[in-house]
Image (cartoon, rainbow, N blue to C red):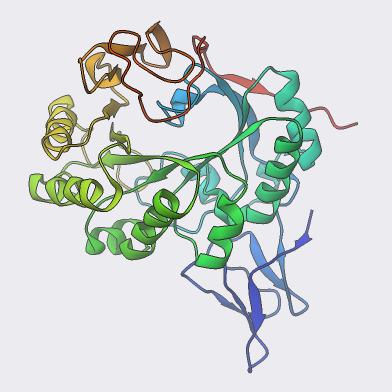
Length: 355
C-alpha cells in the first residue's frame, strides 16, 4: 500500500529530495531511495510499505533489549522491508536488504496492530527488525493508535534521522534502544554506510530533550569496534554527555550477512567492555547474546543488591517496589517499573486477522 510521505521537498531540477534521514536521497520519478521503501512517484514522495509488515511476533521486552522499562512485559514486535543503513553484519539482513515487496506477507492498519497487541496482553508495540524511522509515517500512526488504548511504544533504532522527522517520531515513543554501533566515524562509513555524528546527535536529543526512556546497545565485532581505547572513549562520552544512569548493553557478534568470515565475539570481550563502562562510572551495564547471569542482572548502585535477576529473557527474582526503589535500601533505580513484574516469556509469532 502506497501512502504519501512526509519530509521531502522539490528541487529546482525537478527531482525531489527525501529529508527523513541524513542521506537526503535525491530522486527522479520512479526512483527509490537507499532505504528502498521511500520513492518518487509522479513528483511526490510515497512510503511503499505503509500497512505492510514482514511479520509480527510477541517478544519479551528484554529482547529489544530494554532492561529498565517494564521488565518482564511482552510487546508485539514488527518491522517492514528495507533500511537506511547498510550494515555488513546485519542479523536481519533478509528483511533490511529485501527488494521484494512479496516478503511483506502480513498486512495490518495501525488500529489493527494496536488491537492485536491489546488482545495478546502485551504492554505495547515494538518497532524493530529493520529501522522504524524509514517507515515513520506508519509507525507514528500506529503509535498514536496504541496510546489511545493505553499501550506503550518502543523503538529499536540506529538513530540515523534528521531533526524534523526525529522530533515527530520520538514524540510518540515511550522508550528506545539506540544502536550505537561503534565510536569511530571510519567504522561507521566502512561497515554501516552511515556517519557517527548524526547518531550521537539523536542520542543527546533523546536523553536531554524528551521524556523517552533510552538504553544503548553496541554489538562488538572482533577487530572492528572492540578496541579498548575506542570502548573507553565511548563510555567516557556516555558518562560525560548523557550521565551515569543510561544503561549500556554490549552484545556478542555472530558471523552473518557480509561478515561471515569474522569470528564470533568471545565472552571475555563483553566482560572487558562491561568493566570499562563500569570504570567510567556507568551504573547499569549489561551483556547480551551470551549466557552471563551477572551481565544480565540489575544491581542496586547503593547497596549492590541484585534487584532484578535474569536468566536470558526470563526474570528469576525481582526486588523493586512500585516506585522502582530497591526493597533493601530504598534507592530508586532509573527507568519505568511495575511493582509486580511479569516473568517474561518465549517469543511467539503472531498473525493479525484483517476484518
